[in-house]
Image (tube, rainbow, N blue to C red):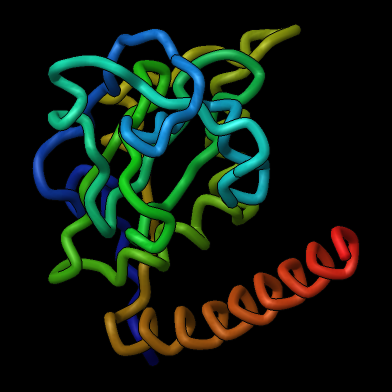
Length: 183
């Protein structure tokens, strides 16, 4: 029988969680970095491409996401919303209300964390920070302490292979639907 082990997010990451750039969004320009804000992340963890904005700050390069980074919304009604960056959508600079963790692929299949952040144990963990009528804040230290139960790596890879196939099919269907709507 395979052993399930509990890790913290920080144990599975390279370094600690980091806060995004505190900058105002500017109208989208292909000559500027695309700005990833909480409002650009759908509840299912996909990117909402309908209202993307840019960021125009000299130090924006310091906040570029790299493949296998995952960001979390840290405040408000969207607390807990997450986005896994695989590099397929071009460069993204993450905003100040997001917290980034760079996942160590030697310790975990990074894409598995994407799926974990859409599981009931994750939702229950986030809900534990509710403060009544609104959700509480979850800071980088707290996210870093988030418990994550993981099977051995070979099982992680098998799970990801199955779920990634489903993700790819969903994306293909979405593109087909978009094409039918706009033609």
